[in-house]
Length: 575
Ligand code: NOJ
Image (tube, rainbow, N blue to C red; front, side):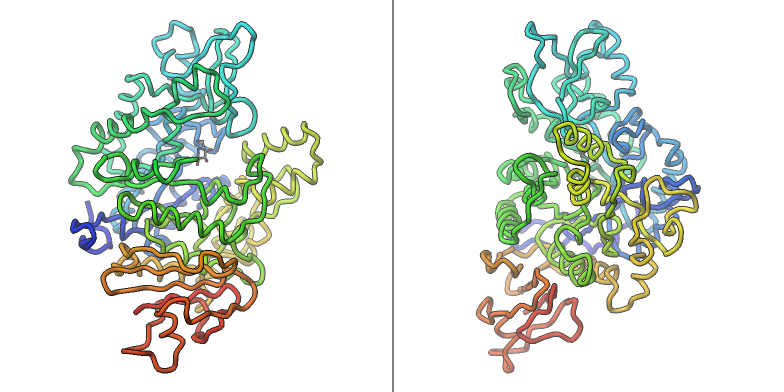
């Protein structure tokens, strides 16, 4: 396999073992439907991705994570898979996939597939067979429960997409479990045949040359048998999860030790303590997990749609706890946006007047934490939320179900539209805005979802032509910094000023090298206190004590050096 642009292994002095390659890597997520359309049908595809690989290699990312491109009825935008072994004609062919993979490798990048095996589509032959009869040999591949005498559902579990997590299969008179849409039945991982079938399909993709997997809701695969039997109110993760992941490691990854592969498990609700277990290299489960704590802080009591304002101190407490919790064992993944979240600059920054400053501040703060950063498509040019005003502009099953449920419960149309405007997943799913013009350079046809009004202004072409104010260029520099800088890769993290509602500040330390990040998370100027950290004191003093003045590694306000941070200014200093 061609070598990646990341340097040879460095030694982690703390652990005295070579640090894994992904401590130096940045991952870029492609959500294919909206990345680039090569054939003009309005839907992104593999040809489109191939035409834009130069963009990714200019950005300098090491790994591409490709959201699902397998055959699918597209009830949940491809997260409902009906065949694990090929490519949906919507996106291209298997031959095109092989060509894409070869091109990605030739550019020194890796390609990680999405592995969606908590559930399949209800159109997958496994489920079609399973639901055909209670005696089907595949019946036990899914989670079925008989009708209870009182007619109640087997448990009170709720689907993540509104409504109950059980649907009655009229023909056989039993309920099947679906943690997501009714068209996404959950597989029964207690059945060894299911596990073997999943290992086999993973093997086939690894044999094809892919470089690992992002595993969809992987902590949901083990359902607690006790909570299932007791009819519990909420989903509980079963203790078997660790056995399942260790077995997967043994069966699929252990004999491929000569390859640099990546495993990242998406885990809603995972605790720091559990994440240590999942990502401790000695336990051989996963390289890292996507945790959710920081992206639910602005959820209200009911659901993410009852959003509340985010307090910076809560965000710092949460991310700081994860930095601390995984400091000795395990590893963090770092993300603010993805295809399930609103655009990060709209959610955490100021997507109007301070869009450039806040988009770059968010990037610097995130990428300089300890962990592997993930860039979601479009964030590298500071794309903003969709700002849709009508229901017919939305496409996502979660948003449409939410609308229906909230209206039935008495909410007005305006109320529901307002919550979707803030939290709908479609905010992050509009086409990547490559250039001004109809279709935003994404398609020559009619896009499957509207290009927001911002498509006339926030584009890759405009951003890359904007010199010092290019968000893309700022990301490129951060990604390059991680390749080369051992403090960024491995330095210990310390949060500063945890109680300050406007300043996000921290240090990274490795041996006697230190980095200091100071970020003004607000639209007002911020007066820095030189006593915050000796490095800052030295940077702000006219005559630095004992040696050279700290160096400005990267910042988003050119020429700035005094004690006042401008609105949304970030500075990264090194001693
Ligand atoms: C998590 C995925 O990221 C999301 O898009 C999907 O809807 C659910 N899992 C179900 O697969």
